[in-house]
Length: 303
Image 1 (cartoon, one colour):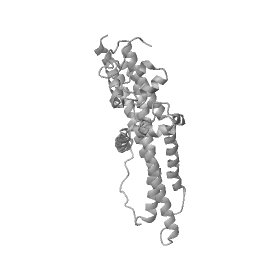
Image 2: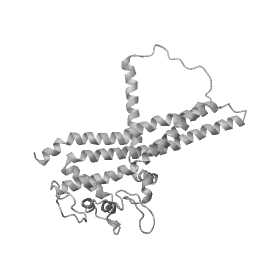
Image 3: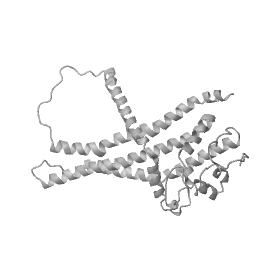
Image 4: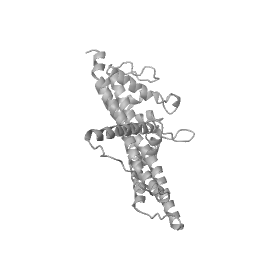
């Protein structure tokens, strides 16, 4: 089987993987955000608005004739509304999907107690500061410390020469793996989908914490003002306040759980990329895998 046939054979799988990454990274966070903003913000704000700005009372117009209630009519109204909601959810989720995972990664690094020893891929640099940027500054040193010299030889930068560190290094390896060995991309794509979902959800939770806090603040302030000014309509504390409060707590807990694992996922991602690239290189399946990178890899004997 030639290379063209192999690539064609895996095109459906590639399309499915791309759909999964887009679905998990865009649509799911978008739907979750839009649905959650209803109890987090719109219900308490609507309660305040209808209390202080009650619509004028009057007879409601009555529709003449029987209402069309056939299944076809209902589907004709529901399906376009559902499609419009999904499209809007995808757009909103795409905004979260395109956010830089670096912020979530840094929050995760600060959350993990093990990294207090600073013996991982992220360590203080000379001159101060601890950059948390993928691929990490001390990736090579981390691999050497763990005895993974065959992977360390693939990394073109070290603590004395950070100018060769760039995100394109990981992207270039993924592109070459995808072009030359599509069957090896499945695991990398799954890792990327998990990271994108975690990162998108982290941004969704952070935004929901702000939205729910705003909704709760508006409701509480309105209730206090209503209690202090008898001339205003009465707005009593009710279960409505529990909606934004619950969303805030759940969002904080979800964000905390993501921060406990995301940095591990990012570290595992770069290790999987290097391991896959190394094996394709030493087995001569992709002999030009590291062309263009200033690496010292020469030995092709599998370790």
